Image (cartoon, rainbow, N blue to C red; front, top):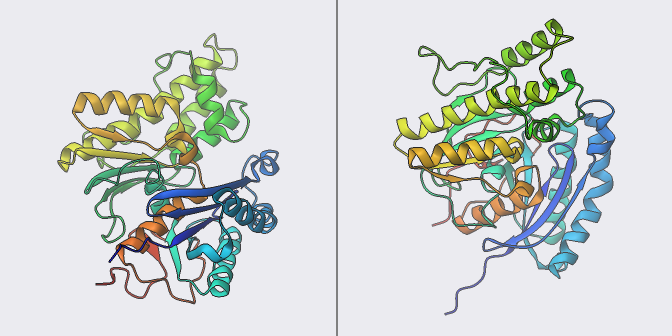
Length: 356
């Protein structure tokens, strides 16, 4: 008998300020749509949850229609729905989860609640090969910085080797950008301004890199403070602003890549995956590639358009769960703003349960 194709999975992402919808089947991206409310938040210097939620309400149905149109499909072709159930902004998550449950109920298809960060781990699946098993993953975003040991993403527990104790790397970029007079969002602004400037002009600290420090734990609050204090103490400095920015960026990416390489070596794992919004940073990508080559490690980073939040990563993860035989999430799936990352799927009675 011919093998039946997997169902078309619609993925919905509304954890922060991007409304993303995508359609994936058997690891192939069929269509996608993305809307962002970032410009509405820029004047506040950060994301305003109520504004984000209202933007999701306005954009979600048009994004579903646009994604279906780009795939040449109709709603009747959808065979499963995957949605970010957490973590994220509570009001924003509620919009996506409510919509996903409505679509799943109306179409009589299974619903899969997924973890936003696991979605980032799956972001590259539609553009490349299956993920190696096992691998070391570095997640770097505005709200999260973690080193993980990942096996079978759909089936195995995700093991935290280390997390940030305070500011995430992306949060540090935003806060330092504000100190240096750069626009929001800070990450892209820092990346642009650092190009062509001297990353060794100033010796900003590399937090938690001493011999007795936890090898996989991060802390960026002190680095942020060090930059702010340097700027306050040198109002008339002869050091060009571009060199200050480049030196700060180098401190962040130096710590991130050094700890990730050490984790690979210590655990004798030859593959490193770097994901999340900060993974779009050009210096992080370059230094990671340089250090992985020197260490004999295989590096994988999604294309820049897949690093920031999008519906493709959620649809790709949902598709992976469906093909692995994962049981759907419970009908009472709820938004989980503070969900801890230990499984890819959320809202199931038995996370490890798969069909025979």
